[in-house]
Amino acid sequence: MDDAPFDPPECQDCAACCFAPHDQHVRVTGDDHARLLPEEQARLTVWRGNRCFLAMTDGHCAALAAVDGRWGCTIYERRPQLCRDLARGGPACRHEVEARLPDARRRLPLLG
Ligand code: SF4
Ligand code: SF4
Image (cartoon, rainbow, N blue to C red):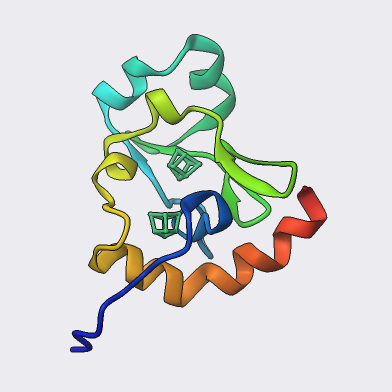
């Protein structure tokens, strides 16, 4: 285990944890679903059997948007608990940065 200090980028310059190579990235619980606006429930969630997830588009969460060259979560105040629990600078953040930051960085100029 690498115990070296980890200093992640600013989240708006990163968004690695909003990317994934599969389409079942962020689980949406009943409470998460209820927090979303009706329009967001319809546009941003998908069901796989009886399980709900945030939709993915182009390899990232459909709620992620690039504005002026920086990433932003368009449902930040209403984002699922899984996203709230991922502490910036923590082990899960480190894993996401190491696995997905290059992909997120590569896409930013295309969307910004
Ligand atoms: S991986 Fe870490 S630094 Fe990057 S957006 Fe997520 S919480 Fe922020
Ligand atoms: S809801 Fe927001 S923070 Fe969570 S994965 Fe989607 S864009 Fe990222």
